[in-house]
Image 1 (cartoon, rainbow over the protein chains, first blue to last red):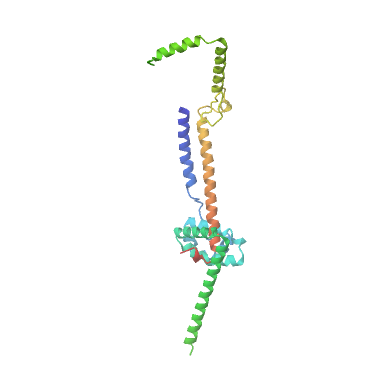
Image 2 (image 1 turned 135 degrees about the horizontal axis):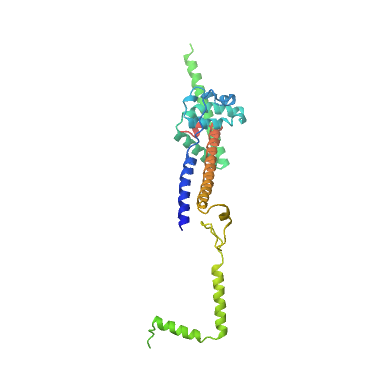
Amino acid sequence: MKIIVFNIQGITVCLLLLLGLASSPCSAAAPSWRSLTPIQREALAPMDGPWDILPEIQRNRLLETAKHYPKMTPEQKKRYHDRLEKWSHLTPEQREAARKRYRAFNKLPAKERERIRQKLKAEQASKAQQSASGVSATTVTNHP
Amino acid sequence: MTNSLSPEKIVQLLTKSTQQLDVATLSALADARQNALKYQSAPVPGFTLNSASAHGSVHWADRFIPHSVQPWIAAGLLAAILFAGTSYWQHLQEQQIDDTDVAILTSDLPIEVFVN
């Protein structure tokens, strides 16, 4: 019984030490903009300005996403660049909420996802048409 | 009729009746006792924290590792396994977050769908 008690004490000590280490976030120092590779700079080009003032954890996460950049299609690369700045301005809570929504969307049946896609595309087209007609109307009225 | 027999009286009666049993019955009872004792001393497979074997023979670990160090080694091994498991689980979580971020940033759906 003494051996068992001793063993449990040992396990507790080792566990506390090791789990403390395991639960600490990946603290690899995030590189500065200058020390990025050309491919990383190309991927993260929109972040050129604010890169060095971003929190380390965010820089590390963006670097992880940048690893996928070479495999992206030109269209995906464009979207990635267009969205990077907005994404980096979000709070960690907003980003986590967005991830949850994305996962929830992905769990929907394929038909339902497609229906939502079509609906959103129609809405976007309608908005684009409205703004285009608004601009042309303004141009016409301003013309002498 | 009263049934008030004292425990001592019961023991006496049982001893007396045992003595009256025939040889064949006594032999059968002795065999049954031996069988029961054999069954009781048989090793039961299962996990034990103590490394000493149930047979009383020297365990292989006792030959190479001092007995006082064995609990620490066991604790260290268990902690290392748990540490590896936790690290692996954390790595998977991180990877899932990175994949989701890439998917949101490159999705054909506008980012506003997922971001308020």
